[in-house]
Length: 233
Image (cartoon, rainbow, N blue to C red; front, top):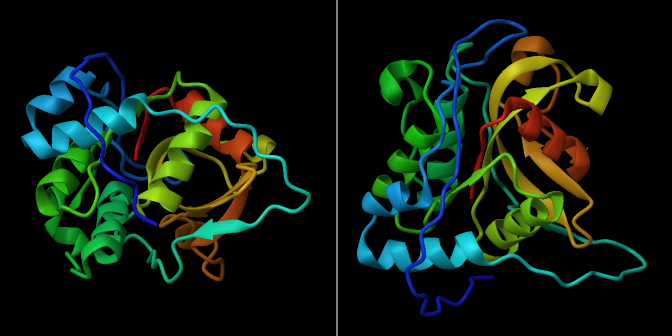
């Protein structure tokens, strides 16, 4: 499904996002730096991208979904490989996203010098390298409902994977703990309660594990809030 573009008048707000270094349980390759304000994000976009970005930034659904059984909205066939090095999770997310949106496979080693990068760098790269989706950055301080609405919009409306910056804790149900990591979101249930995560680092921890697995939306929100950066969608 593709969302209709509508006319939007320019309003500017602020956001905050980032990425760190590397280590088995500390950082898989996301550089820690605040995300840009919406105004700064718009300065790097074309006029057409600005219209879509502003619409996405300010559109949050309020409707409550009442269903007896939730169904899945998924990016069927999305491929997330193991990241090629322990410190390039952002490059892995960009590789998988570009492959999904355009069919083009950009070697991870060719992205961001083959090492760590920030979410802001991922956003700039994706918005310049493809036109299927305009990526907008949101702060880790957004509400759970806003995050779920953004993920739903990205997947069900724009057919594109959000990318999150997270601190994972086994106490929240994550399969392993990691202080700083970037992952794609590739599915969400119609009641917004569960999401599908695409995780390029998990094969480094468990060689037989699938790179895609299901997590509660609340756990994903906690991981984003704990990292304190945000996500792009």
